[in-house]
Length: 407
Image (tube, helix red, strand yellow):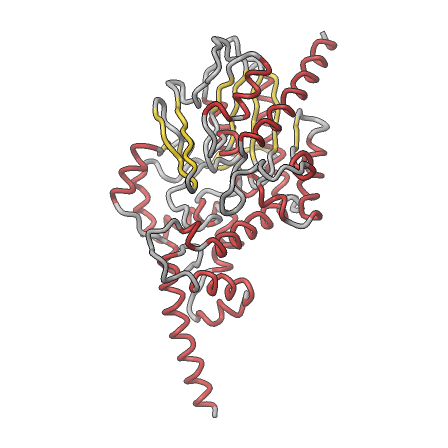
C-alpha cells in the first residue's frame, strides 16, 4: 500500500511539473524557477533600448513620436511633442499647468483630444502639458518632475495616479509584482533615518538585463523589492510542485484550470483575450494586495514621505501642487471595506496636501461607459475623463480663491 501511495505521489508530481511548465510558457503569471530569469530576445531588447529605456526613470515616452492603440475594433491615436508631453490640441500659447503620473494621467485608450487634460484646458483656457507614462509609480513621476525645467508661466503642477501606486513605489523590477512585465526596471526610494534615500535603477542600460543570469545580481535586486518574497516566491512553483500547490490550493488550482482550458487556442492571440478569466483573477489579486497595503504602516509611511516631497518641491518651485487619485475599474469591484482603507488614508492626507480622491465620483455615477471595455476594466473613457476634468477644475478654483484671500 505504501509503495502504491509513493508511486501515485511521484506520478502526480511529474505530471504536475509537465503541466505547470507548459502553461507557464504561454501565461507567465504561472511562476516557475525559470521565471527567475525570463529570456528576452535581442530584437526585443533592441526595440526597448531605442524606444523606451531611460536609466533615470526606467522607461519613458520619447519626444516626437506617435502611435496607435487597438482595443478590439476601436483604434485610438496619441502623439508626443518635442518636449516629451502628449500633444496639446487646443490653440493656446500658454502652458500654465503641467501634469505627471501613470497611464491614468497619460489617458490610455483615448485620443489626444479626449484626455482629461484636454477638457480641463478648455475650462481653464490654457494648454496643459501631459507627462504621464504608463505603469509609473508615484516615485517615478516625482523624479521626472524634479528633473525638468519650467518656464515662468507654469503655475500649477498635478500629480495623478491610481491607488495601486502604493505597491509600485516598493518595487524595482515590476516582474515580481506584475509577472511577465520583464523589462520594467525602475528606481525607488526607501526611508533611512527618517529621510528618503534613492535606490537608482539597477539597469544602467537595457542590455544589462542579461546580467540576471548571475545569481548575485538577482539577489541584489530581490533585496530591494518587497514583492519578491511576499508575492513572487509565495506563488512560485518549485520542487516539489505538489507542495507549492497545496500551500495555496484554491488560488493555484483556479489559475491552472483557467489557463489550461484555453491552452489550445492560437498562441498568437493576445494573452489578455485568450486567458481573460485568468487575467481577471490576476488583476483582482493585485488590486486587493495593493489595497491591503494601506493598512500597513511601513507602506503608508513611504507613500506619505513621497507625497510630502512632491508638495514641498512644488511650493519651492513656486507652483501650486495638486494630487489626483483615480480608481481603476478593478478598485471599484473589491469589498467596500478594502476600499475604505485607501479612502481613509487619502482623506487624512488631504488635510495637509491639496488632494482629490475620485473614488466616490466613480462609485456613485451610474454611467457604465466611464471606463473603456477591456479585460481588467480598462482605462477611463472620454466620458470618464470629463468627470475628472470637472472635479479638478472645481478644486483648482477653490485653491486659487483661497490663495488670493491669503494675499
